[in-house]
Image (cartoon, rainbow, N blue to C red; front, side):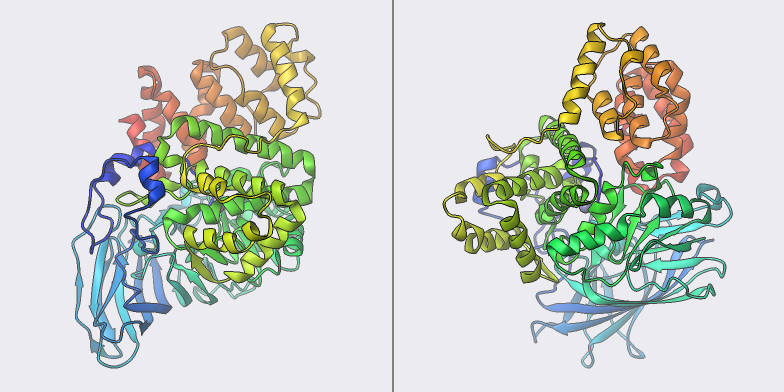
Length: 631
Ligand SMILES: [Zn+2]
């Protein structure tokens, strides 16, 4: 997933969370890095964010039959779970649910006893099902709640076309349980089929085999034959149409943005081929994109065969398509080799971020690779400056916390920087060979950090004992901060920007004299993001009138400029700021603006007005993450 930045706000509520029903809630003082590095108490193989008991009974397949009721804003139907007993004495199947109404549980035509446990904050309610004497399936009739944390129901007005409603799900990290009763842990992999019933004029798509030319008749059948973790089960329903981009790639979107999306992302097929050349065959048949309405709270979500993508990266110049490289890269790191628990998220995101840079270099060249790596490094530095030490550790201790807390730049950029260091030490070709073997070795498995470390021990650490050492690896994974002597990305294109920014700030160069004709979006972002906190009115007016920043159509540039406007209370940009906050629900873009606005009384009142107007269209996560700033 890419990319969200909400942390501290969730902290208080998550302290109250129970980590596991078998291990009652503990409110722990934050551990020191030393304690964490010793890992005396954590059971590394245990998923502290699931009630499920896959060590006793493991679900391997799910058949869904669901009706999307847009009036009630509910999914209604059955989930039939096929399971195997791991422990022959096992009598109870324990599932995760959140906000679900369980109507009945059957084995064939025979009712089966079940009990929905009390709700635990962040985790939901365990569903205990007494296993029938015979058979290996139970069928659960249920419906979701209107405010399911993993589903957003949009009215027609909240879509691009304004004519039809829209539904999309977002299961990562632990939200699948809010729309399917299941073992909601990344270490339980399932295959699935689904029958999805919708209003006739709408199309349903899933993280499964999608038929681009399926008749639009309101009943859609899906099959996902490869076993996937629950957080990758995904569904969207709307006025969706398809346009092919290449032999194996295409895009689903509302009609009004379909052509723009297909041309923005036309390099997807080349990205797919380039990645296969270096890291081995793509395992998932087709690779399509689904463009969601602007309320999608994330950049993208790597749902297999069908990545979910924010429309805010359709910039008209392919400047923000690293997001596509990122979601595509997850087909190898994340979807094929999966983190076993949320503590191990860096195995998904660090590897994927590393691969993203590499794919961008293969398609767009070394200058772009360098620029994007510097911007990523600056994001990492900002998080290191802001986060408590325990949250700077790759293998983070998340017991008792909301797993959504782990999504900072640490698993992404620190993870990627760690791999970049290994690459530099052993050589790029050797490291690529290692990655190819690693993806094959653990294909369709969910692994822990410790399994990775021991694999590294047996492979690279043995072969390259002269350049790699165990202690250094340990420091990267189990200690906070960035180790001394880590690689530091640099870009010549950015050095030139530093020179002119300095000259402009000193007054020796006017804005008009800056030659920005050949600047890329990345250079603009670097130019703006590294301005001093305070600029004077003349400087703000000069920048805006020369470069039309308030009117920028690029959502990232607009974001960087609006942040400067808020810090300096530059009022001519506030009308745009208001419509930006109301029109976009992607947290990476709106959260920093709310946070900055909340620092003054006047700013907070402005933020509150925008938030109240935007709220009906925001995703539950966006509401949750930002409402603290306006209260
Ligand atoms: Zn990701």
